[in-house]
Amino acid sequence: IVFSGNIPNGAGLSSSASIELLMGVVLQSYFHPEVDAFELVKMAQHAENTFIGVNCGIMDQFAIGMGKKHHAMLLNCDTLDYEYSKLDVSGLALVIANTNKKRKLADSSYNTRRQECNDALLDLQKALDIVSLGDIKPSDFDAHSSMIQNETNRRRAKHAVYENHRAIKTA
Image 1 (cartoon, rainbow, N blue to C red):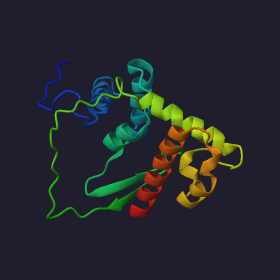
Image 2: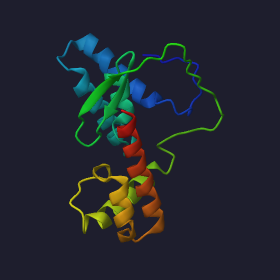
Image 3: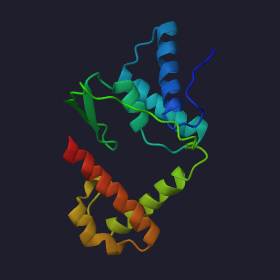
Image 4: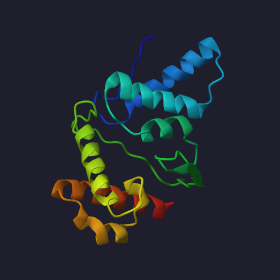
């Protein structure tokens, strides 16, 4: 198999997730196994985690494998519950600009940042009955953020909590 394209390497457009899903579809069409898109998405994330060594979440693979034309998707990455919302993009244009700044999760601090969020979660779990940072509303985070001992971990967790809340409000 030869892959060819004109997207710059490291452009940050989920190219590894795209290739993982593409390979799943190619292998499925060749061997005819009964694997639905949801399972292919999970297999692609497993490949990224296991063979590439990036402890990534499932968002890129899920968007590629489960995306639906003219819809936005709200995904709970912990439970893999998702819902679609109609999205009218008529009259709008999507512009992707090449900043020439490479983005590679495998070479980035992604795994470190994820660990910092996990460490913050452990601090919060001493007083809160939560499974993930996605379980916290911004107001609850603000009320308990002093429990997070490390300032960097606190900032990372705040970003995760507020971004999660923004996505829910948008949906």
